[in-house]
Length: 471
Figure (tube, rainbow, N blue to C red):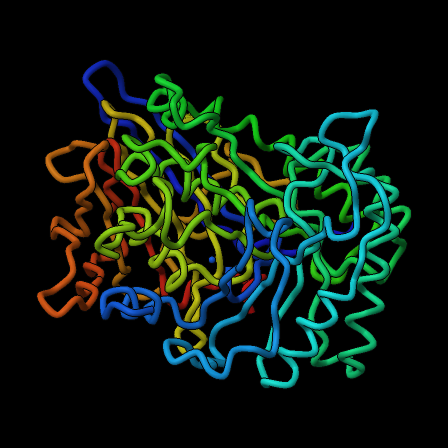
């Protein structure tokens, strides 16, 4: 085995609680990239316009539960005064994949027969005639065998997605401007996914998409406990691993996407989804999805339902909006390997920093504990092996900028089921003219420990940290 020099960041954590003090060692392997995300990793009122503009560039997925019931009428609309083309927005469009099929007389929920593509053809030709750019087409919604209602046999789905791919290639003959074809946009079922990808073959499906709703039904009274339980949050790793194995086998060029995720099923949980506590699940999923090489993570929804990023009535951001916006601004596309062996309540993920002008790394700490806080000490060291151990001794010097940037998110008055989030002790509420509040970091001497309060989420950016994998 060849040895190479690994530049790593060791994170030494002291736990502060009423009952005990525990040392935790976290290692970020700065020379080793464990994955890569897409650069866009998830309008009438001024407030709505402003909160969307803050995410520039942005990916929006159009589709969902009703897309397999929609027939597109094209050509009759002269103009859409409230909409205009924006090249900074990437659009993923969900197509009706049930057109032409009939309900099975034998099996409940199963739809049989070939897909009729004419309506999709008409729709695509219309978008081309208007100069609208669609980044990708997703074929159907939750039609796998693990679906919520309607389903299609895997072999039939694989056969029909080939028809869609050929249609896209016919109407978009230039590969560089050709929309991607995505599938299956459903819950992961190993046998079904393997079967449809085997039938469709290589170079047909550009991205393997799946849904994540790992917190359960929105009316579950135990949801607040689940969302703070690291062992429960870890259960979804089996889905991430399963889809990653399939991607490694069939090698779609755009990898795996989480094309829909809202945490809680059936519209979300009204007393949890729009609160600070939901960030424990949401931002942990960002980190976990990135670790398992997901290119895109789409939140259900931007607006609508309890799990929306924005209040459906006022368009005022819910707490998850601010956590997602900081991820968008700070966390780059290169994912760094992290090990943290001692305390499961402290979730840690690290990426390259987003800024090209000031290279470095960004780290997110998620403290699930309501009682314990942590002091985190950073140090650089070099190691001559990929097999880094928590017992390795770190060099005391710190290689990076003199100051680091910290963003501490917490719930107002410690009420994690409240809807006001504090950033560095400042409430995040829109201004009188519906502008997003300034989200400035606090600068802290890089040689001092990072303080992670109980029930808090902290982003840290270290400029000029030498992580070869981020180069």
